[in-house]
Image 1 (cartoon, rainbow, N blue to C red):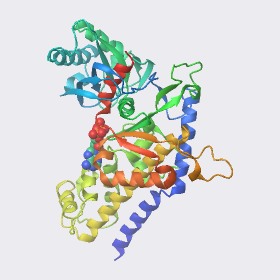
Image 2 (image 1 turned 60 degrees about the vertical axis):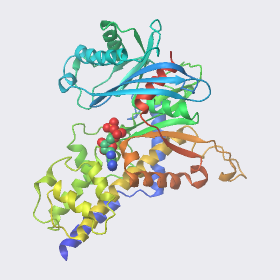
Image 3 (image 1 turned 180 degrees about the vertical axis):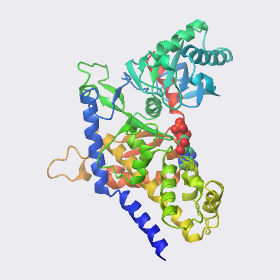
Image 4 (image 1 turned 45 degrees about the horizontal axis):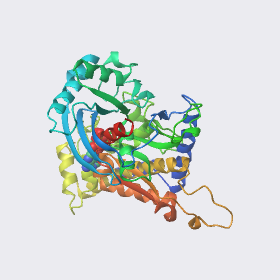
Length: 468
Ligand code: ADP
């Protein structure tokens, strides 16, 4: 039938537009490494901000004592206490976490109200502390995970560049965030010191490194995506004369904003970007992260429904942005029932499309596959880009007469977190497959992706320990 042919044309165009051959991925790897260089060379030198963190030594496992952390970065806010055993064991003896939703009115109210709320939560948490975990004469050290773009001034201070994720408290923009919190603690009479102000990726790297000293980078792929890694200070050209005792510093890439003409971009991506509140921003993130994948799929299905009647009468739901959330898209993609009953259910319940034949349900699975495969493979290319920048991709040091397999590769660990990676099995498998394809098996076997849990909070407490 002609109509089916038109739909197949749309699918073929999508597949071609999303193509990620290994050659194309290697171009993305190179572009990532080049942009990292540019972002380190000068302020504004690249779409990659490559923010300094002033974190120059990562937790080693010897940290000892009780430390606290606050984790602010989304709708939930958390308070943590960790007890570290010290010694050689990298042992977290005990961990308490309390989660709280941030009341909506505080997200758009005044700076004092927000920080007073945070300080009160911390105060209540501390008061419930079991006897003896911190003697009263010892000042408590606090790590503050603040997952918004910050221009760091030191490991424990930094200026808020802008709010994201629904927060809009104008009088904090440009202010020193560590000080805002410290002042609120003083107002409450809490004897605690903000010892570290960190991005969530940096917390993840800290926790990864605490458990495994070969950890050199961290990646988060959840609602959004970002990465950080350990760089040599002499490679951070935009900050001349930067000296650290370790000779290194963690750099927060803000890689969601990466862009390259080598990225495989479709008309759906262009439309999604144009209709977003931040056009021309976060281009890499819009092709990769959980916030967007479902909506790319929705846009393809909408286009097919406009080209044909295979989805029955036009459903107004299909025109509603973000109605198809990524976890639902994943559920359709991973539907292994012979009749694709989960696909049918989600089409009906979410998109109000009923009674589509099996052939059309299979088509939906195919669309999810194309979109997710591209996302996972691009994320893999991003990771290899970091490895290339720090000389861990196996490309350097090949001397004549030696084959790649003769080179002694150092074990390289990348800490990874985020719901897309941990909960979406096919995404994870595609990412691993691409990593091996790009690096080759000999090199890839030395690169380990390790899932950390709750690094954003726990890692901040560890950094408070190693910087106090
Ligand atoms: P966040 O990034 O919001 O701090 P997470 O790292 O837990 O928190 O990631 C949550 C995101 O991961 C969700 O917004 C969603 O996009 C994605 N996600 C969660 N579960 C799944 C799933 N089962 N399949 C696909 N994506 C998922």
